[in-house]
Image (cartoon, rainbow, N blue to C red; front, side, top):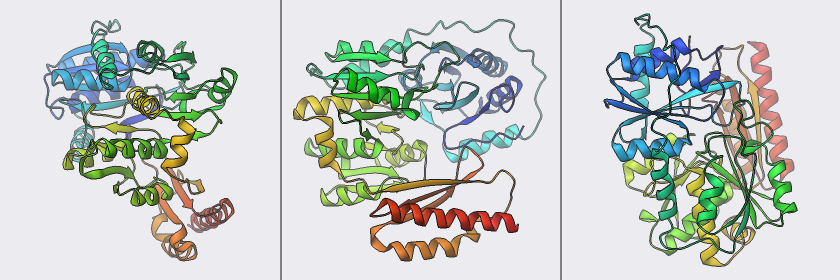
Length: 442
């Protein structure tokens, strides 16, 4: 198998791209690199998850590591357990992908995402093909450490100190995923009025027409319940998107902008700096400049954001997709924690989400396109260099272009931002046509 680490672990079609025997070899390869004699494992509730949990256990235990299994829990709950106990972690999840897919996210000792060197070391060991022929466990692993999630929930409640969320009504879309058993109860305990949807996972319905990649039903539920807002999680709940009362999507850019300004006002934003990726909207950069907040930019992936936060002792960063990291409170992106921080700002400011978003930034029109690269090996980025340069000249200071290969699938992603939708769409289409012409010629 030729699976590689992407921007967030490895993932693929369960039992086709991602096989239990390969996952066992991954565990063996990672055992020394994770720098821990114990690994805590969790899954996001997919039907195939139990097979991959068993495969991980087989590999880790063959190398002398102890395994703690938490059962179906969000990735941030797993990361919190790893951080609290100073141990490594392994999450069985394909995040926002459909239920037929699955994946593995590895955390080193202390609940930290692997850096590039650690991932490269694991990949090198995997490619050696020198592994014992281990028999998979006859029985599935029992979740005897599920109680560790309670500590995570307590930390969420304590993150807003002695304040509460009374007076706020919201709808939460749990994506039929790992947060289904946690979101509504936690928010209700904090005083919010909560309607919960898509919170009945059956192993096959995760992310199916729901969650952060399909916001239609949440938008309708916010309207039908006259709620103040809605929160949509992905399958493993390490990210969240919001819907305001007008039905508008409040993405990670807006939430980071809102939180950055609030944290600056409370002197909680270290060095007055927010960390974002190259995908962050131009409007965010302009708004932060106006508000006196510095912006540090990283490659795509919350792993890259976290590395910058840790290296510089900064306190806030994230992605447009809704992966947001409050590094003083968590070692990874946490959708429920982010939602609570946002709701706390709403409660303290006595402003609606749409009001906070309107004041935080103006979104520049952004167009995203992709080109299939599965049948080519050419250096498409170099081929497009002149086309990209010409597009940037045409846009000037009122727009930008970003072209990059995906870290998780064989596609070229093309992003264009401009003052108008028409200009952004036209520029993106030109780049798509150029890319396709080079691919055809090759």
